[in-house]
Amino acid sequence: MIQLKASRCVRSLSRESECNKCELICPTEAIVVAKNPLPAINFSACVGCGACDAVCPNEALFLDDFSSTEFFFNFIEDDGNLISCRKNVPCIASLNIENIISMTLLKKEVVFDMGHCGTCAIAHKCRPEIEKNYEEASYILEAMQSTALIKLEDVKYEKEPSSQEHITNRREFFSKVNLAGVVKTKHAFEKEIQKATDELVEHTLQKSDIALLKQKRITDRRKLFFTALKRVEKPSVYHVIEADELTFTSSKEINSDTCTACQMCYRVCPSGALSSDIKNSKIDFDPFLCIKCHICHDVCEPEAITLSPTYRVKEFFEPEVHSLIKFNVRRCDECNIIFSTNSNERLCYRCKAEEEEARELWGIKGDI
Ligand code: SF4
Ligand code: SF4
Image (cartoon, rainbow, N blue to C red; front, side, top):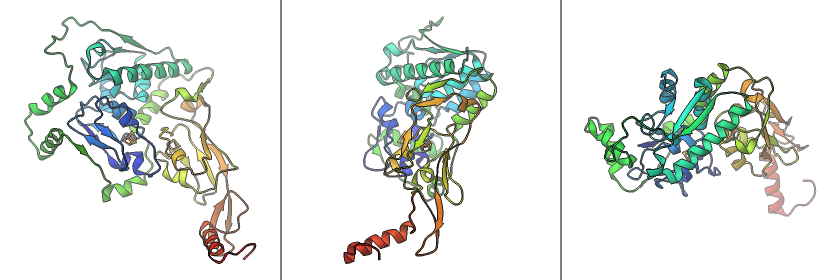
């Protein structure tokens, strides 16, 4: 069954966040992103395919009975190269694109068993997602000049699962697994109750989550990706790839004419890809840390931050921090505090706002 770690959902960082990737991929409409900032989940509708876990940019969703990170390590150590919902994963769509690329780089060849998709009740959403991941991963591997490849196959088993054994209903499968131990702990009991309740469960931030919101965190899948890249040969030539083809990272640009130095984008960035210094005198960007969560775009009122049309493969192997913009740092003429600005403004934001309010109130034109 799926669980939400509220402090990691990018929607908890700003009301402006438009992320609803989990809602869009869920094959049973178990996740609803409505007015409440955080997604609501109908646990009884969740079939435990893990597709939402895979698309969530900040690892906010996780299955309590399958971990893609644990699977990664087991798979790398295992002699086999087959990934199958009939063998080792709840659904191939539960694997995120970064883990797919990392595992393929390390194994040299990975096979996706697509043989069950034809009869699977959730294939309408999950099969196109698996194929999209396959295409993206293959494109990136090729751009890295890697000979590692992914194959889509209809695998024939010596003993095909009988129609009774066939797991066509993931919910039934997981409920069997979970009920096998017959609810031994309070935690397990609560989960069983959640599953039995056919209603949307809202999520809210707890006090303990608030401190976590400010922490910049590199996702586990990014750490594994970085480790895998360290173990393979660098390409002889670094290609430039179409940014549209990349779902898990990006390159950014900032329009210096429209940026107001409000600091929102790098303060809200959950991965630390956007950053500044102690004086707030600049915005730097590390493409390798970016998880393409889009929240920096969502919070930027003047829409000054944009996606670059291309991404350099070099960033994977030799990550570089790019300077996007520099600001003037000066003392406010009115209150003397130090502030940064992208113009010749002499007043800090607070004094400027007060001045504008006074002008409006008293109908003052020209200098005060
Ligand atoms: S995909 Fe992740 S970050 Fe986006 S709304 Fe869902 S839980 Fe939040
Ligand atoms: S740079 Fe923007 S898209 Fe990338 S991780 Fe930070 S907030 Fe998300």
